Length: 165
Image (cartoon, rainbow, N blue to C red; front, side, top):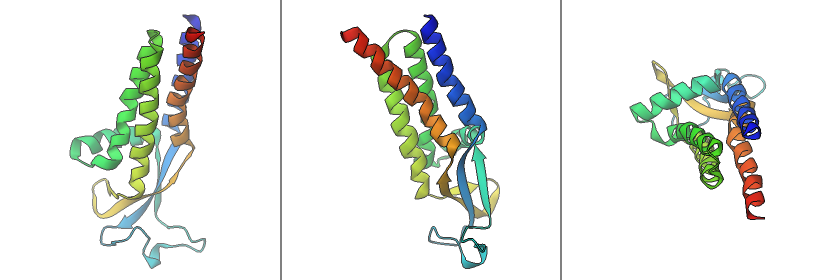
């Protein structure tokens, strides 16, 4: 019991750190541009878009929930990885390692594919009708966010291999 609490605690610490770190870097582009490239006037001397915005994990969690509520479906589906991760922690605490593994792996796949789909779909930029957010880069908070269910999945594999011996 004590080991399970420590392992869940480590996973939740990874999750909490991910929520506080920058997760995604978005370029702010005008809505009238058809391609995902930046217009020529918005590129600085280093070849990067001048207007960009880093979102932290907690901002993305809130924005993803609102994205689901208001129908920005493809990228917001990645938000569903959060409750699925919590279910994997619940099953892990209840010693249902097979279910916990399934939920953890589902959270990883859903979180990764849903978030990466934002490379192809532009997102609304809050209350600005003239600009949109185009995903530019995945930052360390995103990878830590995925590491939390991955940690639970790896521990589950070890627990399941001990049970089958």
